[in-house]
Every structure is written in structure tokens, then in C-alpha cells.
Image (tube, rainbow, N blue to C red; front, side, top):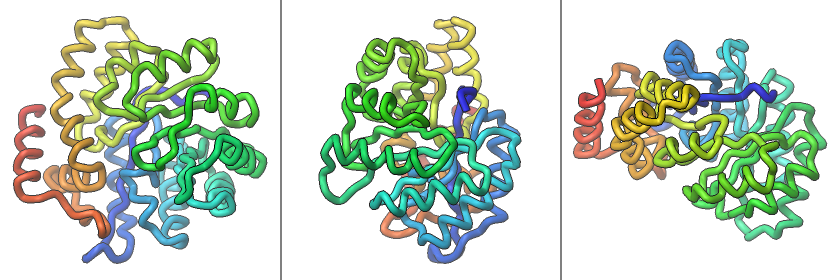
Length: 293
């Protein structure tokens, strides 16, 4: 699916009281809001969606519901990452069977993985499914930092690894990927404060939770960069940067769920051990959102 582009919106996973149970109707409302806001793709079960904190049965419910609810209105990019290759393969097959357009794979592991182990992990997942894979590099959450050279080895060695999400916060990784990949590998920004620089470096899209709160500003930034209007893009980026920084520093599930609650969408709190945003944090977030309205 080479047409994955633009603003890729990450969904939350709504829980009931005390973090127990799933509130799928609330998830549906949040997906509808993202699509109505104009995002170009929906990405469930990533960091914002607290995929790591779900049981297998809950993960299956959220994946199936999300794909069905999106209903091909936009592409779905489902995060299937898990600690073991077997579990990641199971999730990838499940997502494909229920209609996911792309699966995203972050090589998460308790033990430090060698390059050969990482390549084998991607190859096993790639051999098990037919849909494209978005390779996800985020050492801050996975503990695994893949060099550009390793990423290109994986892209060249696993046929359906066809796109890369880069979240190290190092813009030079994107420039190097563009250079060494000879412009053949679509890459996507996963670091909010780098959005402007990433688009300037050739990023095909921006994977972000921010559209839950400021979809139009995100879309306007993307459109300005497409049009080559650097002045407008710069103004739009720095206008939304305080919120982008706040989301990153405050933690995605806590800040996005607090922000949705402030915009009258009740989706519960994050699941422990993640705390909900503090009262001071909520007040700061409300002030930032008010300044952007």
C-alpha cells in the first residue's frame, strides 16, 4: 500500500472504570472524529493506544473493531509488536485476516537483540503475511536502535517491509535514509517536534496522536509543505509546537486522553502503571488548547 501518506492519526484505547474493560463505542466515536478531521490513515494499538498493556483477547477486540469501524474510509496501519516473534506473527496474521492495510512492527525485546535476530524477526513476520509492513524504529520505547544500514538490510531482505517510521528524534537519520536508500524507501516521521524538518527532509507522512486534538493544524502544516510554502509551514509548525512538546513530555496516553476529555469525549484514564494527567497538567493543557482554538 504505497499510498500511505500525510497525517496518520493514532487512536486511544478507551477503558472503563479503574482501567477495567474496553469501551468500544467510545473508541468508535474517537475514530469517527479523526476521520471527520481529515486524517489520511488510522493507526490503532500503538503507544497512544496502550497496545502493550492489553491482554491478547483485548488486543484482538480492539484490532477487529478498529478495522471494521474504519471500514476502508482511510487505510489502517495496525501495530502488531510483541515481545516474541511468535506472538507478533499471530497478531500480524490476525490484523491481515480482518482487513488491515499495513502492519507496523517495532522490535521490542527484554534482551538486547543482535542485528541478525532483528532481521530474522522481520523476516518471520514478513513470510507469514501478504500485506505491507511499516518498520518502526523507536529506541526510547523498544530499547532497540536500528541503524540506517540495518534498516536498509531489512528493507532489501524482506519483500513486504516497504516503509519506515523513524522516531529517534535525529533528523540526520531521515536524511541518511533518503541518501543511502536513493529515495526508494518511503519514510514517516514519528517524532512530533521534528515534523517540519521531517517534511523538509522528504518524509511522506507524519505518524502522530496530535490529530485527536488539533487535526486541522496538522493537516494545514502538511498541505503547506506539499505546496512548498515554507513560510506558512514554519508559522503553522511553531504555532502548534507547544502542544506537540506537551504531548511528548507528558506521555501520549495521559495527555491525549486528558485532551479528549476536555473536548467532551469521555474515554477513561490510562491503564496502570500509567497515571492520568495531574490537575496542574490538565490546566496547562487546557490553556494550550484554548490558545490554539
